[in-house]
Length: 230
Image (cartoon, rainbow, N blue to C red):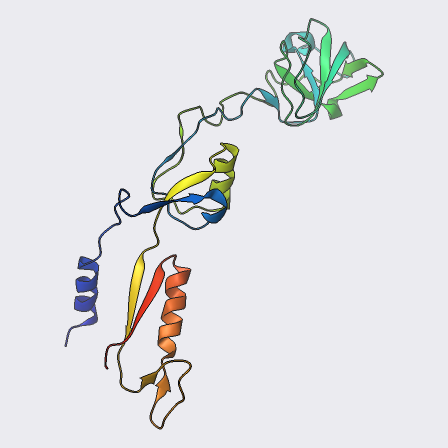
């Protein structure tokens, strides 16, 4: 009889990687969870798409606020409010700022965000109570990745974070390897299928069910040819 190691070596010697040219399929992103990417996903966009704020606060020119402190606050005129999804309409001039919210586009002229906890506002006048770092809380266009960069590599098993990145890139479909097919042979005259009536000396082929479940869990497709003892 063959040893376990010999049998394993024979089986693995017959297993070959799937060819992406002939063993792949296109799937909608919503159906691709757990599948293996067959072609690398290339970004068609810069991420972030534009310069934006990482915090709620005020977009300012650093040159206007670099010497401010709580004892001698700089006073700026608020000229615009920019929620996420709104295109800024003003270019900041010296002495001006814009109310801005997380994810909102940075207005032209601004290069720094002062968080709202470091400010005091009265109407359209904003006092800056603490000097921010230059370019603080600004997420610049393309700082995560640039158009043409690889978002997800070939061979990646797609998980929720991967799908979120692909969705953000408006990648509606992906090329994935087809599921490997695994044949499960039963051996034994005493084995009967789940729905058969048991006769004396017979047992249900429960391993067939368990192995098929394990194959499914691993991402492959079980194929039960049946009992080869008959």
